[in-house]
Amino acid sequence: MKRRYRDFLALCVVLGMGSACAVYNDSCPVTRPEVWGTINTDLDIRRIFVRQCEAPVGNFLADALFYHDYNQPGATVVLSLFNGGAIRDEVVCGSGGSGTTRERISKGPITDQDVYQMMPFHEDTVVLVKLSGEQLLRVLENAVSLVPKFGENAGDQADQMGRFLHVSGGYDIALGQSNVKVSIDCNQQAQELTEDGKGIRTQGQRVSVTFRGGIPLEPTATYWVATLDYLTGQNKNGQPNDGYVAFHEAGVEVYNTNIPVIEIVHEWIAGHGQVRQTNTTPPAPDPSYPSVEGRLERVSCSDVCK
Image (cartoon, rainbow, N blue to C red; front, side, top):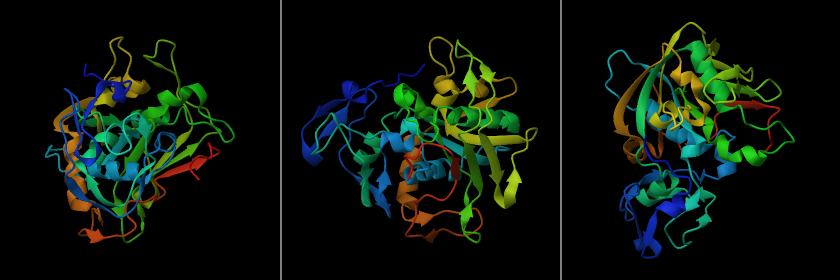
């Protein structure tokens, strides 16, 4: 099992100061600011935001996974999933000093240091997962199972809400909309796990999914999704990471590409920081990208997304 951080700040050793500082240990590679690309909009990376809301940064990272060419014959990715827990607002290097947080990455040049701090789990790789529509729905139910209802707050569950998923299924410029919409009704029954964390006690009824043209998720159909390998793993007690029991069900196939997520994100920033990629048209400059597009529609959920 790969090592995960509970406290990134406690594990990274910070040397130097300001823009010249270096961060290193076996999981924090040495990095000095190098511009990877430019982004058009501010990226809100607040913990409370990326773990409950559709966020431009989540859309951007999910797009990076969705559009990458994995060169896996027969594996056509229809959806990518990027968990909010992999997006961090801790500051470990820079003029603000360690032990602080930042609300956003400002529009303009974005550096490797920006990305390494935002995505401290550098060992994560991308996996391609083949599963049924019914199993995919259970994955998505787990993702939103801890999102509070309107008027409630996360309370003691905030640490576990890193399971919240950002999604991408591509974007149709002609229609001006995302190719996938995940609707979440927080008034409905949330998925509940068994006491040992290894099974699903209550399936959950919060989620519905539609694809381009209003086509609903088909329970018996087969889907390929791209996501982080951590979400398909388990801890030392045999409990699925972040409660993703469905990824361990019979019939689910997981293929590890062994491509580091950070490499795919680097590639995406360099080529698409100011461009919206689509399946049907050449890339075109889009000053509003990345933004909130209606990929996640929330009903009766906490109001932190306003």
